[in-house]
Image 1 (cartoon, rainbow, N blue to C red):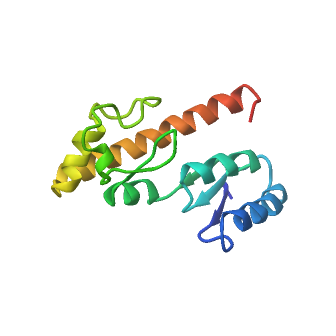
Image 2: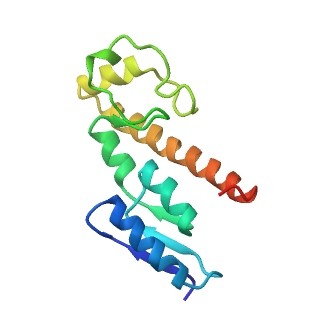
Image 3: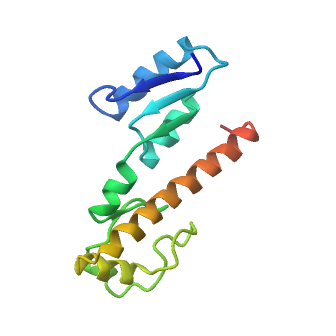
Length: 144
């Protein structure tokens, strides 16, 4: 095999999934990559990489984006909430993603503007890419 795919649905919740991976991954050859199927929220990703998961995939970042949830360093936000109506700051000031404000995305979402889906999806994917880049740098420095 070129590597090992783990997944689909593992356990009843995140804690059970982590317990299963903690047991399973050490049983797999260390010289082969381990791919976790269907898990790509930022919290899970941050917990599975130290267990030995090398790659992962999911439709979750774009699905959440389409339904109004945007990833940020402070946790997910619901862009439809009125508090974003006059927030002309970036979606996440800590991560460079898209050059549009929360107020603009709020407006697009509330008006059912198709551009919202594209911009929100690009934001969430860029957020995940930035997160995995940080993880990769930590791995190279033997910090993770």
